[in-house]
Length: 296
Ligand SMILES: Nc1nc(=O)c2c([nH]1)NC[C@@H]1CN(c3ccc(C(=O)N[C@@H](CCC(=O)O)C(=O)O)cc3)C=[N+]21
Image 1: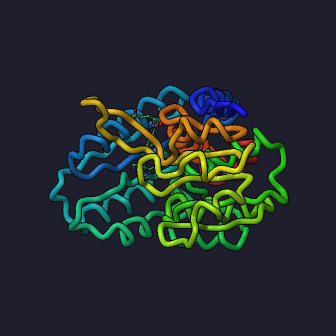
Image 2 (image 1 turned 45 degrees about the vertical axis):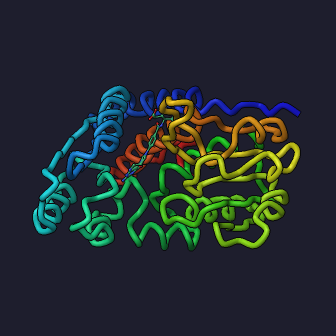
């Protein structure tokens, strides 16, 4: 079997177009412009690229983008004061604090300072609790993007065996909650799981979010399964820099029914879902109906 390639880049472009159409309608009918504030502390080069991409995509869909770049040595009180200011700013509907933060800053404290209604990353403990209890929340962007692609490919996910490899707070755990919400039978596996290959081979849906380059190989994939590769690893091969996922693409694609590539899979969907979440937050803040097909 040769897997169908799930084109995350094209899917993300479609999500952004739907967001843009809704934003245009909000502007025209209500005079409302959704706004996203992105806070970057320090000069990490990878983070700077991400923040630049987020800014460009935000403008492109017609939203307002507020960028706050702070020096690496910024104190906690100063950062918290900025978040308080953004919490109180009615032009700001979404707030994202780029992670990782410099080591002297307590990221849990900082994230939990964000108004949960503006927490477009879905990392605030209130949103985590709401998601875990099946209540309306802001949903983390990467798992939301994976869920959208899975629903599109399968129609319904009910009754399918889903294995999530990785137990991080930003991907693995919320991904498992979302799959459970769509009535999958969910297993969370990780680096200490006994006979990981056998566990993975039981999956109709296999989500790889371990952060280890090409760890999930074809022999761990059930024939016909859907493989979602969340990993983004920069490696060097044959003297060249290369971006690879947590899945060994070639061997997995030979067995899977469908697979997301890296790059061009989950990554672009993450940014598209950030915009979708900002739109959702704006609609909720104004007591308006939420955008259809762009929420969990
Ligand atoms: N508070 C916070 N929220 C985040 O959502 C967040 C963060 N911090 N810190 C960093 C990570 C990383 N992240 C990515 C988003 C898009 C791509 C993406 O579009 N990747 C492209 C390729 C990019 C490339 O070529 O480098 C792709 O996979 O096709 C990747 C990574 C969001 N993050």
